[in-house]
Structure formats: C-alpha cells, structure tokens
Length: 429
Ligand code: AMP
Ligand code: GLY
Image 1 (cartoon, rainbow, N blue to C red):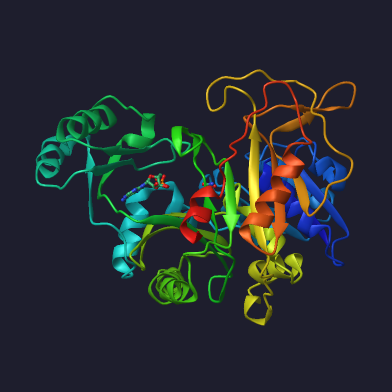
Image 2 (image 1 turned 90 degrees about the vertical axis):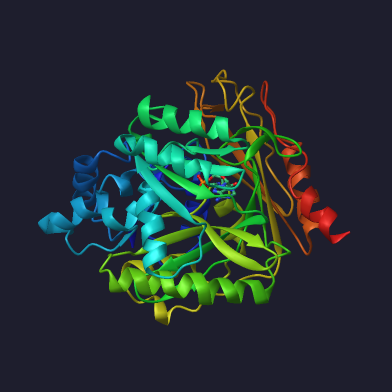
C-alpha cells in the first residue's frame, strides 16, 4: 500500500514509526512531516489544509490510504472535499467528515450530541451575544467554580475555570461581546465544574464497530506540580492505574456504545479516531470533551503498546472492516516525556542544533517540532520539539528508561518536566 499521512507532530512521527513496521506498507509519504519522519518516510512539502494539492498528490502517487493526524483539515472538511472528487470518492481515509469533526469543532454541537444520546457529561447552557443578559442571570444561579468554554477551536486556550461570580461575569462579557477568542467565542458554553481525576480514552471506529485503545493521562501545564500555563501536553503515561477494568467497562457501556450508536443513528459518517476526555469522579465517568483525532503526546505512549499490525487497524477503520481486526495490547507501561524549546508556550528561539544519541535503551525518540538546517542537522523549529517514550514492566521502570534517554538529548535552552508520572506513583505508594 502507498500511504499518505498528514501532520507534522510527535503524534505523526509515532504513526509513521508504526506504519512502516507493517509488511503491507510499500511507500509512506508524510505531509509536511518533520526531521524524524524524514528518516523513515518521504516528507512532502504540502500543508495539511492545501486540499487541492493533497488531491493532486494522491492521484500522482497512486495513494491507497490517507491518514489524517490533526483536527484542522478535518474541521475544514478535507474528507468531504476528497469524497466530492470523482477519482477519490471511494478512497479509504482515516478521519471523519466535517460533520463528524464538529464534535471537536463546536462544544455546543458536542454537548447537544451527548444529551441526545444519553452520554454522561456536565450540565450546561449555551449563550450568544444577544443572550448576554440571560447568560449573566444564569451564572448567578450556578455553583462555583463554573466553567466557560468558547464554542469553536481556540488552540486549547478557550476554556476558563472561574472561581468567583464576578470573574465569571466579566469573562462571559469578554468572550461574547469583545471576541476574547475571536470567532470561536461568538457562542459560549457555560458548564458545571466536574471534580475528580482526568484521563483520556481512545476509540478507533469505522462508524459501526469500534476498538478501545489503551487509555492515557497527559500533563497539560508547563510547570512541575501542574503549575503555569497550559501547553499542548508535556508528557503522558499509559496504562493509567486508576482506570480499572471496572471503570473502563463503565466507559464502554455508558459512553463508547451510545456515542457510536449516536453517530450511526444520526448518519454522521465517522471513520477515524475518537479521543474521549473523561473525568473519573469516584469511579463514575463523565465526558469533558470529544476530540476527533488521537492526542499528542498521548499517541506516543499509546501506539507502542499496540502489538497487532497498526496498518491493519487503519485499514479496518477506513474500509469499514474493523470488526474483523483483532487488537492486541501489550501489558507493558509506556511513559512519554516531551522536551520543549525554552520559553514555550510563550515565545522562543528556533534553530538550535539538537544533539541526539545514536542508540537508546528500552525507549524510542519521536520528533515533533524539528526541521533540518542547511548543514543537515536537526534543529528546534516548534514549541514541542522531542517526545521520548520509555518502556517498562511498571510505571517506575518506564519512567527511568524515558528519563535516561531524555538526559542524552540536548540543545540550547531545552526544557522538560521531571515530574511526569509522579502523581500516579504517589497514589500507588
Ligand atoms: P477542554 O478544552 O474541553 O479539554 O478543557 C480543557 C481542560 O479544562 C480540561 O482538560 C479540564 O482539565 C478542564 N475542564 C474542562 N471542562 C471541565 C469541567 N466541566 N469541569 C472541570 N474541569 C474542566
Ligand atoms: N494532549 C491533548 C491533546 O492532544 O489535545
């Protein structure tokens, strides 16, 4: 098979690493890719939102399967675009249609979907600018803290947890009346605060069948002890100790099954990954959000635990034959540590050469925001630069292996959190 993978992050390097291990992979192209994907596949200088360029590339290179990594092209309708073209109308694609991607693209849409399909989630109301008075009155009747969410995509920044009423009212006004998050906050979801421990469950679906992939927990804040600004994710662990078999069974029965049934019933063509952000409140799961793709850096921890042929899973999703696929998961632990450019998530300097070890033990190095300079050396290009995943029979061993490799990687001003997984280790001990 000739495969085109879209994206350029650590998630896509992990996808590429798995895909090229498959005996069925003939050629893998990654658009646009990074310095890591360039080592194992062929990078193509095409933007993930260049729909006509992608269509032409598919025809010119006899592509058999397209795999979409990030949400942006999905929310913008890439799958619908390819389906509307004669030559690619029946091409197998991993990634939902625009309507399916609205589960991530609009919080109001996803809340209404959950409500219609009986999926447990926090109580909420949605308000627009002309409903500002009703919104402010609604806030007065709610318990604190209260959660305000910009309806649209806001690069992970559109959620505010307000501790007092005044802050909540001011934020609602800023979002609706002053476009605090631009167009994304022209609608605001006001939602009950859920307490508990967060984790993410990943589901592969062809729209009818599904397979539940290993769960993961990520570390969103830049600082140790979960302090400071939000980032795309600074680390991940899988499995998650408090996600017991009993808890995952509840997630399957109360969330996964009604969600997949809802997609089918509402004729939402969904072939791809569904990332379910969950709150575990005393063993009871509730959905915080849906994403229509795999998580990053969760993918770098989850994919290495998949022992069955990963390309087979992708093919099952895209050709509606997932029911026939046997998913085999390793009981081993994976932990991912993300190394970032100094200054991230604020501004940072780019172009520092990255020193990488030639061999590593019980770990794997994934590139994220890297490119090559004129001398051919890998350099830091984005905020999140390298994701190292360590393996072990338990969490402690996996962390030891991840950090041993992290310590062999360096560039000027590199930063990483040393406390990934420590919260869970404390729960065990
Ligand atoms: P989201 O963009 O929906 O993932 O929200 C970002 C983060 O805000 C989540 O990962 C949670 O940590 C937090 N959050 C969102 N909604 C709630 C809620 N209803 N209760 C508590 N925390 C929330
Ligand atoms: N790590 C969170 C995300 O991918 O959205």
